[in-house]
Amino acid sequence: MADLNTIAASLSSLTVMEAAQLAKLLEERWGVSAAAPMAMAMAPAAAAAAPVEEKDEFSVILVAVGDKKIQVIKEVRAVTSLGLKEAKDLVEGAPKPIKEGVSKEEAAKIKAQIEAVGGQVDIK
Figure 1 (tube, rainbow, N blue to C red):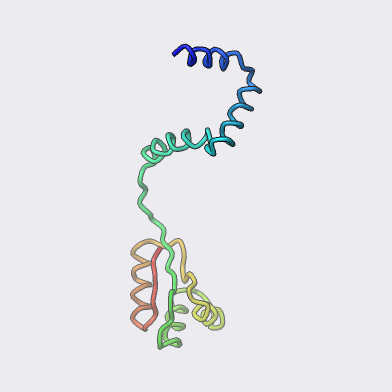
Figure 2 (cartoon, rainbow, N blue to C red):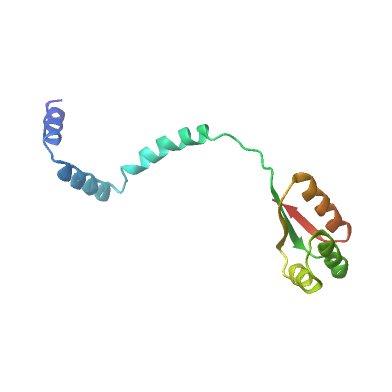
């Protein structure tokens, strides 16, 4: 125990610069980081403090077109205010968002419309 007291006394006499150099040396020699335990200790507290929010805005994403490309293009035009060329480009470039920032009910309605004509849709 006397050796530990001697080490503690030596560490207490270090300047801030010397202590920082010692920490860096020990990190290199032992392959650890002094910041890692602090980050790990802080993570659970931060996770517990964050309340779970319910999403109120959703994005409707066209995942695949299916066999009836023309019908999917028509439905995309009906759902959005896109012209024929823009709707065609969107459908051919799937996966792409059809509409963003919509309510859950509207997203479900759009999904049903697109899937009724053979397209595959995902809501995020």
